[in-house]
Amino acid sequence: MNALNRTLNTVLISSSPERAGLIRKSMARHALADTLQRISADDRAAERVRRLCVDRSERRPDLVLFDFVDATSRNKRLLAELALRRGRLRVPVVVLTSQDTENLLQSGALDKGEAVMFAPGELGVFVKKLSDRRRKRYLWSLAVLYQYGPNLLRSNDCDALQEQQMLAHVS
Image (cartoon, rainbow, N blue to C red; front, side, top):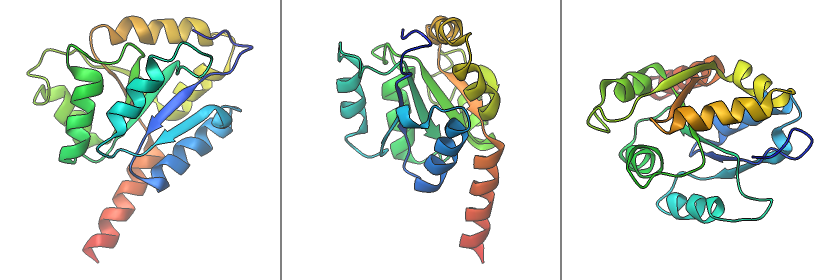
């Protein structure tokens, strides 16, 4: 893991430019946005993330954020491949959820109830912990918890954006 005085390398998997922007903005408040690499949640996302995670250089991510606000079939497959199955990533995956997707994950429907889900809190608090002197210990804690299953994270901003988008589609 990178020490605090070194760059925190974070990969964000998201198919929504709007939500990716909100996450980047939250990270920018704590001077972490420059370290965020976005990968679109498409059919080749798992391959690209795996390639980054086996990299032994300074570019290897410390953390993968997965935008799972929308439970599309592609996102379900990608999440299962990266964070729920036996061959999941060795780098901790933190899953950004909505109420619906959090309920889906907690129900065990995607992993037959094998993974334990931990919820470290809200996005702003999570990013703040990554930016202070406790970062190394916090990343270590996420890695320990990730041995049992992905960490879940909620963003009130992303929930509000999803609600606005759904209302726009209905109108």
